[in-house]
Length: 318
Image (cartoon, rainbow, N blue to C red; front, side, top):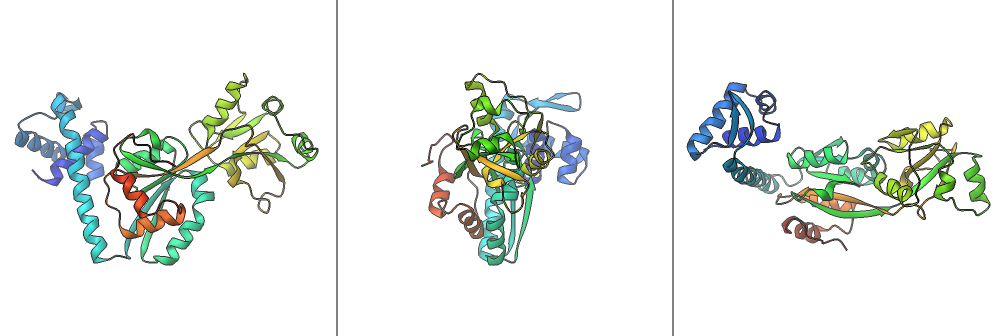
């Protein structure tokens, strides 16, 4: 049994049993992947995969029991490598962060700047995507840290730690009726907001679920004229007069958005929780702890370690 065999089996399960894709990921040939998997099965004495001719179509019952063990072995091997690197070169290495557009644009810059100044020899890479894509990058080992508002806590293999809470704002062009209402001390209601075309986030992004829930509880139907992943896109179309925007409050900047006005919407929509996620059982190099604490000061090394060893489903949030 060797690591190449284990990686071939793991990637086959991850890549929907498509051996062409597995071969590309592992930088080898499809026949080579098939051989590695067959040799592993021969050594274990059981078939891991269901086959239809030469194609893999699923996991056998033994395969379903064996796959978590393969994942654990490969994770431990990666942890061993990282532990060696941590002692051999404490301030050099790589750090890959996966975050949504809003987190990468508005929440992360100061932490990234301060980290880069402290660790100039650590190569930082940032991937942007949906919360579910971020979770997949963490689970595959392609990202070290994931940061998003929604979905990360749904994966038991991830330790998804509370980082900070935030609220939404309504944004409108200067002179909009909602701005005039606010100037007279009149808070917007959902009924009043629903009188205008709405532009906001796509489902699954940046607290959209709380926006949908609020309208649903009020008996109103939310049908945005435009949905986007990124607050900057939403602001662009609000500025063009296409509608009223609902964005993360952190995404509005008076200096950068002089043509727009922001109205506090915390009384309309529930507060949102941004989470920082790590794969459970991972070994973290020292500088990873430092980055986490720069981004979310309450998440010191002791707190992070308690999350990493906690069983899935634990509720450690304050």
